[in-house]
View 1 (cartoon, rainbow, N blue to C red):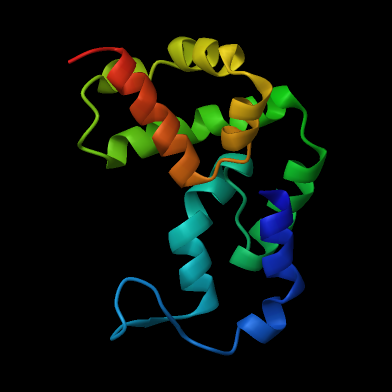
View 2 (cartoon, rainbow, N blue to C red; view 1 turned 90 degrees about the horizontal axis):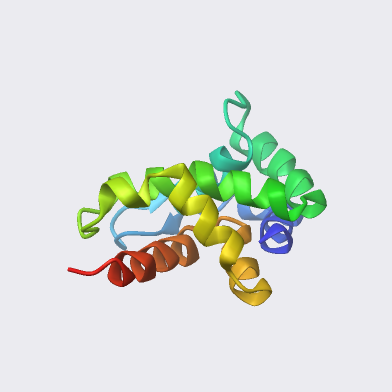
Length: 139
């Protein structure tokens, strides 16, 4: 994830000029709006309370991600998971999926490859993992 975000930073000045169609072709977004929509929650999970420009937040996040230990990755993902659960009305076991002890236990039990998939806090991957745990908890 850090490499993906670093690539955006590398080309930031070039990418800043155009407008982007994100949700619909009629509504054009700036680069800041696009990055905020796609990665804002992840950036804030890695750098909570950081009051900077989005580009500054992205720079700080890339630095933290690239040097992070497994435990630091886990802490960022643990900050992100309840935010994602709150947004998604499809989860049936919301209370359990927001329980930090349950989440920490589940994250710690993941195989290295599975942990790597969610460790950067990519919202799609984290939501998919939460959905799998939600299904495991039953109807």
